[in-house]
Structures are given as structure tokens and as C-alpha cells.
Image (cartoon, rainbow over all chains, first blue to last red; front, side, top):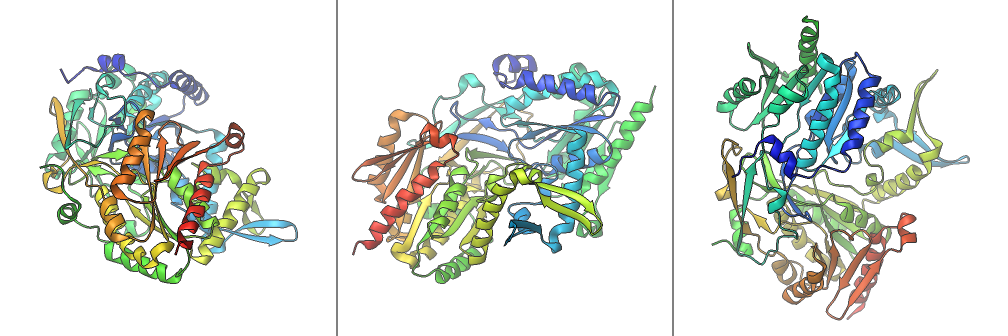
Length: 309
Length: 309
């Protein structure tokens, strides 16, 4: 048997050691931001180990661009944010300075008072703006970050965080942008050691991951405003897949996007309609991000939902 | 047939579009640092796409810690460095400030002259030291960086860079620390679109990647000092695998390491002996890195090799 239900998955995959601590921290975070809007943003790809002592794994394409950008716009809109992100994926604020760029903003010189670091004028403006935003968020403790690597860690953490967020009822928004694997190899079937390359070829069998949206929507956070993502490479099946997910899991919205155009075009699919968001060439040129439009649209819809009796 | 030789691999896998440009840049870099010691450091894991429009891929465990740290010690030892690294893996210098740490070193305030960024005293020392090293290396143009993601990109770039480094003869050292996949799916066998999850399970067949050390040592850089790595999870096979590689490819050294102890224990295996390098608990506590010892040992051996008639 290869398709297991979600309860069996949790029975058979060991939880991460940080699980209880994360649960407690989310409880505290919810209490601190009681009666405010709060969002869980998931981000980055999940890994599927191919060996117990893992050298090789299957991964999902995602640098964490969508998730890390979205966190900033949710914060600007006044949300408290739980950011469940893949280890070493893009992080809010610092993402604006890829590779060594932050070093290139700084100059160092020796003066009589010792070495001095100064900000170089040309690049300083951007640094000032983003640093101010970052410091403000840190001061207000509006952002809580939790990291995962494997699919199993992700699904365990998703469950505990959702269950804690349930206390926030309709104030909670779940924004499930992580690229979660559909396939995995159960722990019981993993070889202990690194697969050796003294073979002619390698056959690997993957099981289907149970769809966790089902218990999430119906059991873990029944009152929350849940938004999932659907990424495809084939445009012809995108809307039908998005609509299929909505019908099956009865959550609020699916954001559909295509691999090649995801940075400037998405479809917000609800029961009632499909709403298109697009960056114009001028907006792309000016550095505008599609996540700004997505979050602005979601905030409106979440507000409407909150105002329903 | 699943095991192809290296020539067939290059015939069947399309080269990256940057190939010619990288070749030209390495030629220039070699000319600029003529008669100086020069090293190619490869770093990070290679991805093996499972779809043409790639959403899923197999990856090798590596954050690029070994490679990015080694670059710094080679630079300190006076080498010019070509750094062939996995996109978004750890980078030299900036690696000392993970996540948001660099932001935490900086303070921002508003003064009459406008906003001021200052370095906070507690964390400033480390920043000054590393920033100085980085600026020096940038000024001297001693570091050239080339990025890859897929196995195929890596192997194409490895070949062109090696072939250009051949002009440096014995001055060239190749330090092959990248975690290169042993298995791949040929382009001709890849599905075009994202594999759909409306199946019960998924079987994937991988082919064996040809061992590129063979043409590299015998054809591309026959005079260079070539060092490869062997990572295992099973201690009982480490030395025999390292020795097997030396016998098969006739290069200079294999650095053997185990997944769980690789940050404080390695074995430098040559034809003549096995040389152990280890960090003491005191050295680990003090923040010393095993790469400092590895590079110090390699520099000695490379010098001996250069001084042989």
C-alpha cells in the first residue's frame, strides 16, 4: 500500500526534537498578539531523504522568494507573523542584499580612533530604509521564525503551529506558500548508509504524501482564513487543479501560478471567481513585487471575513 | 544501457549558456595571476532535475561550508582562487554572518544630518576584521566566482575551467569539495511537465554519472595537483574507498571524511600514507576550523610538488 492517510503518516514518521518548544513559543506569540491579525507564512521547499544518514534527498524548487517577500508585506499591513521557513532559504529584509552585497555597502578605514566602518553613500539609502523596517519589527516582536529541512519536520511543525493558531480563531490567516513534496520514502524503507555508486543504475520508489490540507482545514484551524498555492508548469491544467483543491478541502482561496511567470502573474481562485493579479512592465522595471498586490488583496478579503458575523 | 562514458555524457547533456564566457574569464584570470599559485575550489551540492520544467530535483547534502571556508584559507596562503559554487550556497566572508546577523551588527538613528548607520560596539570587531579581508581580496581581484545549480552545469563548467587552468601547469591546484551526484536522469528521459500526484506511487530510474576524475586527471589538467574528497557515512569503508579512487584515477590526494564528524576530523590519503587531521575540543571551543589545517597541509604538499624538477 502506498497512499497512507494523514494519521498513519504521523504515526510512522518521528517528530522533530524541537516540536514541544515550538508549540509553546507559538502559544506565547498568540497570547502576545491576542485579538490582532496573525498569519502563518510557510516558505521554501521540503527535502525528502533517500538515506537515514542523509547524503542524498529529493527537493522541491524554491528559494523562498515568495514567502520571505510576503512576510514583509504582511508586517507592513499590521499582521504578527509566524514564518515557517526552510533552513537557509531567503529571509525577509536581508533578502534585499544577496551574496556579498551588504559588504559592498560598507567601507572600512583606519582612523586615529581605531578602525571605522562607514556606509557608502551610493548604496546607503536602501540600507537605511530596510534596516529601519527590520529594527522596528524586532523591537515590536512581530515576527517569529521557525526552520525546517525535511518534509516530515515541515508537516509536524505545520500541525503544531496550526493547532496553536486555532486559539486566534478568525484572526488567523494561513498562507501556505511552501513547496511541499507530493512524494516521500517512509523511514522504514530508507537504507541506513549512503547509497553506493558501484551499481549500474538505481531504482527508487516513492509513496504519495497524504494531503494535509484536509485535516488542517477541517480539524486543526476550522475558523481560520486558509490560503493555499498551486504551482504548475502546464497552463492548461492550472485552473482546474486550483478549483479541484477548493472543492476538495473547502478552504478560502487557492493562488495559482506557473513556474515561468510566477514573479509577475498569479490567479486568486475562490468559490465565486478567478481574480487575476499582474505586474505591468513598468512596475517590474520599478522593482515592484507581485507579493505586494497579493497581500493587499488578501488583507481585504480577510477583513471581510472578520466582519462577517 | 545505464553507465555511459564521459564523452557520451557531454554529447547528450546541453551545455549552460554561460560556458564560453566563463572559459574566457578564466583565461584572463589565469593570465593575470601568471606564475602564481592558483586553485579551483568546487563547493556545494549538484541538483539532478526530475522534470524538464523543473519543480522537483534530487540534491546532495551540502551547504557549501567546506568550500567557502577553504577559499578564505587559500586566499590567506596567497593563492588566486576560482570558486565554482552552487547558487545560493555559503559564500566566503559573508558566511560569518548567517541569517540576519549582519543587520544585528548595525544600528540606525536619525540625526540632524539625516539618518546615520553605526556599527554596534559589541559585534563590530568581527565585522571590521572580516570586512578588511574581503575588501583586500576584492581590490587585488584574487577571487573569481562561478555559480551552478544542476549536475550538468557543474560538469560542463568543471571541464572548461580545468582546461583553461591547464595553462598554469603545476601551479594549479584542484580542490574538488563539491558534493557531486553519482546518479542522474538523462535529458532524453525527463518528463516535460511537473509530475502529477494523482498516482498511487512513483518509480524513478537513475543512471550512473560517469567518473569525471578520469578525464580530468589524465587529459584536462595532467600537470595540476588534484585533490578529491570522499564522503561516507560508514566508517568501515572510508579508507578502502579513498584508496580505490587514488589507484583508479592516479591523482595526488583524497581527503576522506565522515558525514557526522566532517567538521573536526579528516584523513588525507596519499599513495604513501594516511595523514589524520583533527581539531581538539579546545580548538573547536575557540572557533578554529578544520579547513585551516587542511589548507596548511595542502600548501606544503603543493609546494613540494612545485619544487620537484
